[in-house]
Length: 456
Image 1 (cartoon, rainbow, N blue to C red):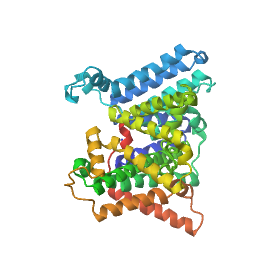
Image 2: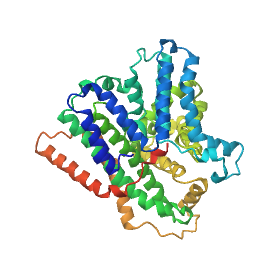
Image 3: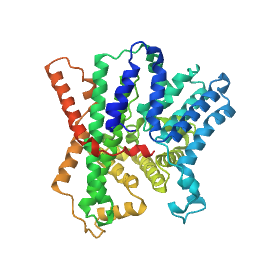
Image 4: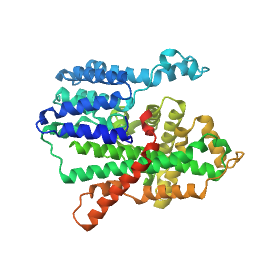
């Protein structure tokens, strides 16, 4: 089940809210949300929901004792099954093809791997489980929460399949106050604002650009330079609004139940350099990598080595393919190059810094959209080395791209959502605008696609 489905918006969500706020059932709220989250996840496959439930119970069993603090054996036992499940479902086929079957096609690999369908969001909830175990090991969570809170922390449906990647302390207060939570008019208005804006970003912007890009991406080598440039920039906006839209909806949904999620984006395409970009894009992943990988490796003491390692693994986290590893190493090279030449870079005008960063980041996204051959063909077309037999983008295509750019750089969704409570004539007009935006989004929602980051 996904957020941009009418079944979710008009069946699952209303029923879950009704059960959560039902009079006399406050004591059952943690269980209500846990069961609803398992139902939400089971739509992608009952087997996957069973795997998730087993992992939750396993990690809790091996971290509940105070003896886990400083105990590497218990830590290893806690994180090993989730890590092995991630390896099996996401990476085993890739590793087999790489190590012993490089010449095999995907259809020629062992049937065991062909039958292993990737559970939605396995990378996200695996990172949540591992971070909890490590925090317990480090003594950063001295008190073990009740099982119902821990289970809900992992399975809570707004963040289950595409983040944000949470630490327990991010949501501990909200989980502890579920039974006493009362939804105020202000929180309801803010929540609805986030949900409306997130769905609009996904359905109206990301999916519209996707429908334009898809036919172009089928033959990237045939694109003229302007067509190739259009694909590069349009896909950069598509993946941003797709994932940003999901994050906004997730924040809004969590607020409906009294739980506040951390911000996951901070206007990343306004970054002044590649390092700044990773402080603004998918922030919860960046902080996770910093705290649980980069710093344990030694941090800045061996800067170049550690940057190469963490970005290579970051790329692999996104997908089981060498194109994702190459994407990670590409960003590592950008960050290292900035580190070495920052005295020159930082003297450039801010607008030039931001423009150069946006172009470099956008070029890297081609490794998400296409395989190596396709990315190479697209870049050849970009510099005029392709046959250029495809038609260039139309005026309407460019107009839609301009609107996406205007939405990216000129609209502040978080600020708009936080001011959603009507207090005067201007605020009521804003509320009416949200209603109109939601209705327009619904008109196109039947053509909406799955979120790009669901594959991760």
